Length: 159
Image (cartoon, rainbow, N blue to C red; front, side, top):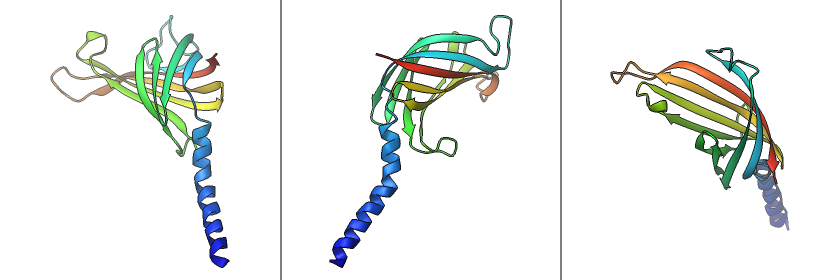
């Protein structure tokens, strides 16, 4: 009888420890099409046409397979994964990252794209995107940051 109670207690303890991860994963479904409203919050080289406060609307498509996903925007596709818990996001977040050399067919210009998506509800996501523009000396030297853009967005699922 005592052994049966210990098994039940251990089972409940394991479920208690694992449940937050399962709950976060269950609420983290992002597959589908999204109507995205974004606002530019910072950039290194503002101008009269594009500066902080600039807004844009886009349609994003996300194909999710478990804890992995591919985000497609009008600018291209980027792969990511669900991170169940971080210091900044204790309930987990979707993280996407891509480094691209030779953007705009310029051998000395590259970019690093990062997207963080938080699931707010079944039909609402929000988060941020950043682009770090990278340059090099053209002689095979190291890449270094030469500019950046940072955006905040809110999105609703398109039925």
